[in-house]
Image 1 (cartoon, rainbow, N blue to C red):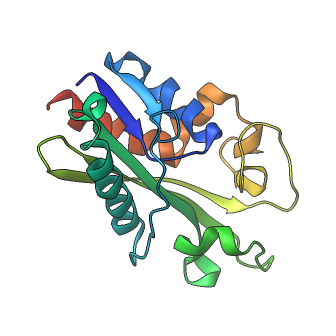
Image 2: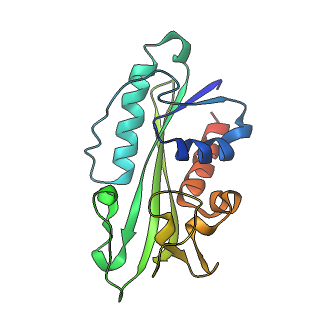
Image 3: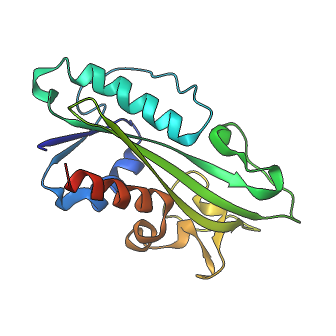
Amino acid sequence: MEKIIFATGNEHKMIEIRAILSDLGAEILSQKEAGIKADVVEDGATFEENAMIKATEIAKIANQMPEYKNAVVLADDSGLEIDYLNKEPGIYSARYMGVPDEKRTARFVCAIAAAMPDGSCEVVRGTMEGIIGHEIAGENGFGYDPIFFLPEYGCTSAELSPEKKNELSHRGEGLRKIRKILEHK
C-alpha cells in the first residue's frame, strides 16, 4: 500500500488521521489533495453505512486515476449520540446542538470504512463515552469537542492535548482498528 486517500476535506480530521497513521509507510492524502471532486450523498441509516458509501464512491473515482489506481480509500462518518435524546443527533449531528440538563450521558461515534484496491470493503467503529458539559471549554479540537466532558479526566475533549485526544477519541479508536486491517492487507 503506497497511498491512502481519506475521503474528507476537513483539515482538522486530516491532522488527527496523519498523526495516528503516520508510520504506516503510505502517503496519506485528503480527497481534495488527491484532486477528487465529488459530493457523495450519505443516505445510509447508520454511521457504518455512510462511511462505506463514501469510501466506495471515492474509490470508484480514484481507480479511474492512474496515480491512485492501487490506493486504499478511507472514509468516516461520525457524530454525537445523546442518550436522553434516544441517541440523537446521531447521523444528524451537524444539524443541531443542545440537550436538557437532566440527562447528559453521550458518546462520540466514528465509523471508518476502507475500500481496498481489490474491491473489498471493511468497516470498523470507535466510540468515546462522556457527558454533555455544563459549559464550553477548551481550544483543542473542533465541532462538539468543547462541550463533550470526560468525567474521568475532569475536562472536555477540547481541553485534552492533541496526543491524549488521539489516544482516547472515537476517531483514534476507529483509526487504530482500521490500521490493524490495513497492516494485514
